[in-house]
Length: 261
Image 1 (cartoon, rainbow, N blue to C red):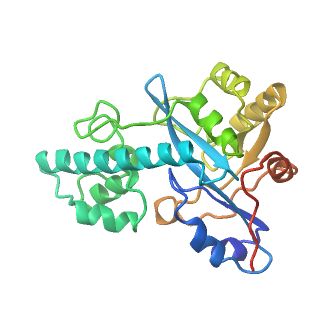
Image 2 (cartoon, rainbow, N blue to C red):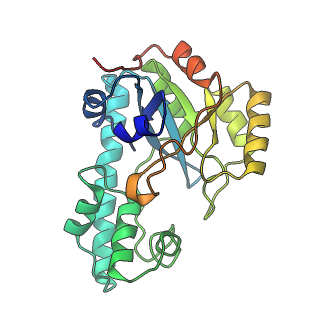
Image 3 (cartoon, rainbow, N blue to C red):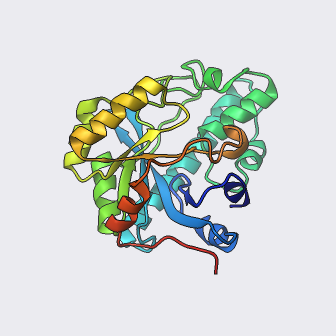
């Protein structure tokens, strides 16, 4: 929250993967003049491909949504432990304690395992760790896990009073680029917006996504997708287009933005 204020932001969203556990501490750390939008980034899967769905301003006490998030977190934990075990079987000197320390008490995911692999000297980059040789689908250490169907995620977040935004649809340079027709299908299912401005989107992709959002009457949004050391500290590197915050707040009924008390 201090870094967000130092970057000159008026509003910051906290959307950790499949958890709302950081909301309380984030709200308590808010400096004057900064507004917090609570949310989560839901892990989804479609036709074997990973899809990330941002949920904003939903009621975290909604039973079905909270239950799904808990199931995803449990599956992520099982998958992460299994992948570390597979790496050990392949002779990679990576331990569960090391990976947990990198995750810093958060939900452990493949990026944390990849960072441990880089630290061990087995690979030189995240891209190499996420290849089919290692942690990518079909890789020697890959283990699948539970994830929501995107349409179900949209409907659950809506039932909890929130709104959904499709995260970085052109951001996966290693794999699947979410087709326009899939985005159109999600729009018909109740999708609220598309994350257009993202560090992994080039200018051409942003232009086409803005046009698609306009055609589908979806709200274009943006964000830095800051993951701390993993991505480099980049809060404020991207901001939401004018009007998107007001549209989001005007639609959501499950929770309200938070300010310093």
